[in-house]
Image 1 (cartoon, rainbow, N blue to C red):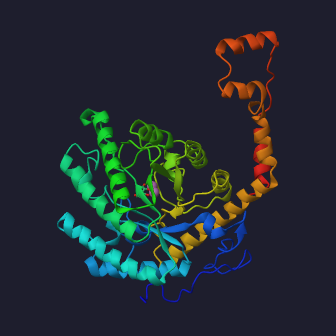
Image 2 (cartoon, rainbow, N blue to C red; image 1 turned 120 degrees about the vertical axis):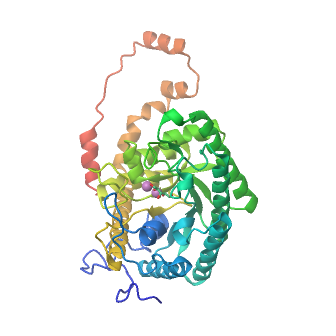
Image 3 (cartoon, rainbow, N blue to C red; image 1 turned 180 degrees about the horizontal axis):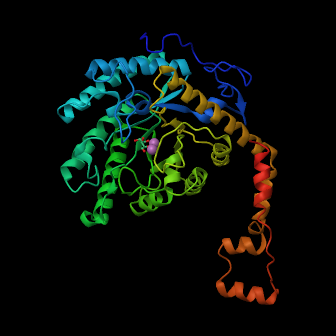
Length: 435
Ligand code: XLS
Ligand code: NI
Ligand code: NI
């Protein structure tokens, strides 16, 4: 035991009336919702990077956090791992996620860096023999080191591509060895700063080749988890190739990867792309590429990916509704890719963030389930499209009527469609009854 969280007792469900700030008021992991345990619906995870590696800097000032593992090399990395698993236990958290660079210091060579990562991976494996916390996903950091400033897979220099491959091979294998449910690729530098120095088509071919290599290797080592791309329109790149779900699908389709790769959708990234989170989820679900989600929201004034814990039940309910209608996230989950604010210095702040976020998810899940159980909302939307289930509507979809057939039909039957209300205000009021 370290003394990092000293004086803090395990966080447990105490019900909505509890005044204990370090208790769950709504997240009750074993409560059944639509026939499934709450924890199995949400599958929440702690993000290693924001929780243990982030230093509290912003563009105008550096580190505000004073963590005992900072600047201490491999000794620090081991201490960090101890503290991480202590937090997982305090929060009773079923999952975590990490990048290679979060868990171990970079060495002088790729081989040394990868050895460091594997050494901490072995510590994780030992801890996971007694801990209930599992790995939701692993990923490689292909964006912080200056070698990646012009991209990883999309770099003009093939040696950078090769280096990135060496990193991903290592983390993919570690993710597999730790029983990870998913492997994520977020391409923060896979894009450009200026078109003046960029060949878009060339870079997309490179990115697709990289993805093929990752899938081949995953199959070779027997990794059964999902391979996920995390869309984001910009930041750090001015323009990122994995802009949003629709763009990612077009890319996957062009390179024949649409059945092998799904999406990890982040609330804040959806906003940066001028979409709502539920739009991205609904679209991914309809395209068959909904994999997992990152729960963190943005500050709507700042226009940046501020990675804040979710705190709006009405917003998250709409997302959860889409997920439930899709049949759940399966191997995916809700990763808190969220960090406490730079003034939130105390170890307890790390708990407050996750507790609040989980309570919001629990309430949203229950609200979405109540909307579905009530059935009124689904009925109204289904009725709106009922014309397509039979008669002319069905014949159109089945390809039985040509353009000329339809033109003739309208004339013969004297068809004169009457507009019907979209009922937006009524639907908003209806949803608000449940949140
Ligand atoms: C950055 C991304 C990143 C991914 C993992 O904006 O959200 O944190 O989730 O590389
Ligand atoms: Ni993000
Ligand atoms: Ni993310």
